[in-house]
Image (cartoon, rainbow, N blue to C red; front, side):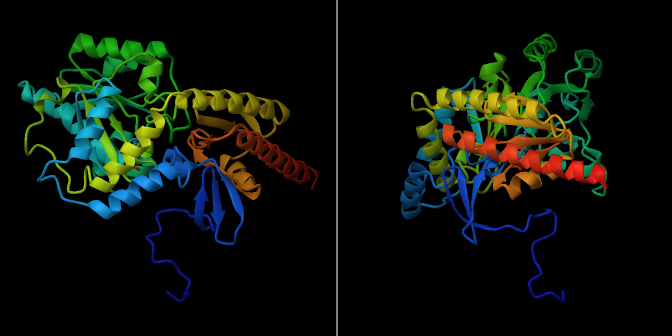
Length: 402
Ligand SMILES: *Cc1c(COP(=O)(O)O)cnc(C)c1O
């Protein structure tokens, strides 16, 4: 390299030339002191905003006690976190991992092993959906099934049958004697904040029950309050058998978890899975602190109220700027704006207004404020969006005139 400022980070991310050194709630402070309203939340991770005092205190306290001691020994705080997650959900067992993809890998293994332990090792295939995102490991990439992510990495792991999103007939056709489970996101996040009718999820549950399959909800993005309840499945009224979590679980500290019923997990025995760092005391302390805050009365009511406000105000911006935006979609504070202009142009124009957002598939821009966002911050974001749209339509008029 000739440029002394050249980066030694593997160039797999198209990074924006903007660095941050501090965060406060919904705000990020750049190295030059500029304040940005952060509606990326680290891609749905910082659900309690930046530097939440309860999380900071929990991690500081844990840092003086114990960082790591491996899964060779008991973990009282890990036991407590698992018990709390089970108490709040359908699950009986939790496996701790370090990321969403790892939580997903565990989900796939649990589903395959379930059938193998019942004498049906041939039932290892999962039905998956177009537009899905399940991670970047070789297994979860195969589940994601996107040609653009798979290219150049050799033959994808066998065992995934992808069908169009929301197409029940296609699901029925894809199910055969080799099928183990159906895998779906309650709302597709990376795929463009795409949902399906509740009736579709109910029909998947029924199919699984009729055919002895397991239902896996990938709640890595939708879980931990993002859609207005602790888990999206509660709002759908449909209960899965297996549920990977990650993103917001540690409020910014890396931790993933795979939740399962006792029946679904019945194939998992000592030695059948593992992780060196999974359930690390620092990660567990962070996640227990996240739950302390989220389980306080009124927490989700606030997130739901902010969701309604944001979606109403965004809809009025869509009405004012049909040349830039066409639709508001999403659940809770997983909100998508479908753009008419290229979504990347909108993300850039918003960043010029010091509002940070995330692109997604289907030409959508995601608004992912922290769940503790205030009314004033929602109002501020909408004003910034209005200005960005005005700037974009000004550019368009200029281009048309020249
Ligand atoms: C982000 C995401 C993943 C992958 O999580 P990583 O922590 O990046 O491995 C898996 N599934 C869904 C639905 C996600 O949004």
